[in-house]
Image 1 (cartoon, one colour):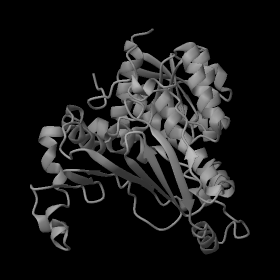
Image 2 (cartoon, rainbow, N blue to C red):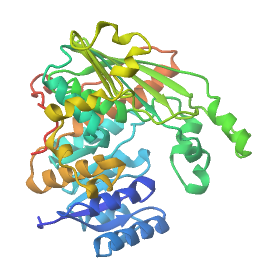
Image 3 (cartoon, rainbow, N blue to C red):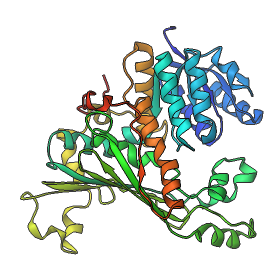
Length: 404
C-alpha cells in the first residue's frame, strides 16, 4: 500500500461532496477517484478536491471503475445501494468506509457480514456521531463508573428536514422516496451508534428485540401546502417514530425519529444509571449525593445542570478532543468528521481492527427494516438478529473508542 491512502468516493451528493473536504484535511489520504450516477455531481466534487488537495481525481459514472484505482472507498450513495457497493469493494479487496443509513431488509445486512467473513477486507461504518465530543465524554464517564450501572439510554434524530425532502426531485435526493413510500425509523444510527458503544453492544451485550410505533404523517403535507408544491402527494412516513429496544443485559434503549415537524436540532442522548444521569439536551450531568437532592425541582435544575458537563472534561474527555485543531473543527460537523476520518485512514494503513465494524453496521442498520415491520403490524415486537453468530459473548468490551 502507498504511503498515502488512495481513496475513492462513491456517491457525490450532499454527504459525498462534504466528505471531500474531510478527506482532504487528512494528510495521510488523497482522493484519486470520484463516482456518481449524475456526472455533474461527480465533476463538482472533483473540482472541490482539486481546489483543496492539489490533484484532480478521475471521474466516473460507474463505481466499479473506482475500485480499480483506490486502496479504499467511501460509500455515500443512496441507502438502497450501500450494501451492494460495499460488498463489491470487499470482494475486490478494497477497504470500505460505509456512510450511515438504514437497511431495507435482512439481505442488506447479511450481504455485508457474509462478504466480510469471506474476504476479511477491512470495513468501517462511518457513524460520525460516535466520534463527537459529547458522546465520547459520556462514554468515557460510563467506563469509569461515574453513572453506576447503566439501566436505560435514549436518543433522537430530531432534525427538521422538510426543505430537503420537499426539494427531493429537483435536488435528485433519495431521501424523498423514503418519505413517500416507507414508515419506519429510517435513520437510526446517529442516536443508536453512541448508545451501542456505551452499552457494549456486540461486545459482551447485544440488542435483542424492538417495538416501534409511528404517529400520523401530517408535517410534510402541511409544509407542502405552505410551499404550494407536491400538494397532491400523501407522505407515508410518520412524523414521529418511537422505538423501544431491549438488550441481553437487561438495559432498554429508546430512539425517536423526528424530521418532519418544526424543531431544533437535537440528538438528545440521555444516559441513566444507578448513580446519576447525563443529558445532552442540557449538556448536563447529575450525580446522586454530589448535586443537591432538590436539583430536579424546577427551576433549580436550570441553574445547576445546564452545561455543567464541561466540568468533567478535564478528567474524562479523550485527548483527541482536548487537542483538536481549528482545521479539524472546520473539516465537517464541528470536528467529529475529521476525528472519524483520521481514525479510518490510520486503521486502513496499519491494518489494525476498525472501531466500528461490519457486525456493528449490520446490527444498527437492521433497526430500520425491523421498525418498518413493527409499525406495519401495530407495534408487534421484532427479533433483532445476532449478526455476530454468537461471538458477541466472546468479544471484549472497549475502554472507549480506540484512537491508537
